[in-house]
Image (cartoon, rainbow, N blue to C red):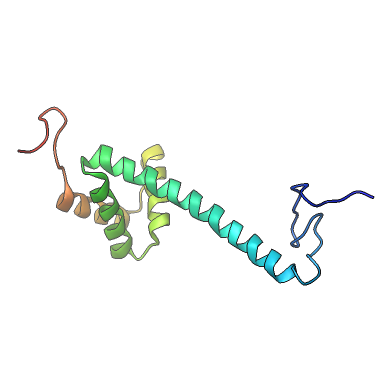
Length: 125
């Protein structure tokens, strides 16, 4: 008799090989699987937002905290989730396309926060 426990093969449907978990632990297993999915999504989302903050730092000459504030403001002013704003900004960095309303909100926010300094001039006094 072979055991699937610890095999690492979880398929759609909840349990190993696509079967829903059974027994008294089934609800907890399903709950943990959902939590794992949420954590994976959060890690991916965090990485996307961090990349967009990096773009704000480099392009807008702002601090990372200000970059976060810029993204947050653009999200609020356009009524688009912050993660989606971050994705749009990353794509913009690759192909130059950004929806007009997002670009306008981004320019306004960057005007309010930056530049904190120009590398060729050194930090502000």
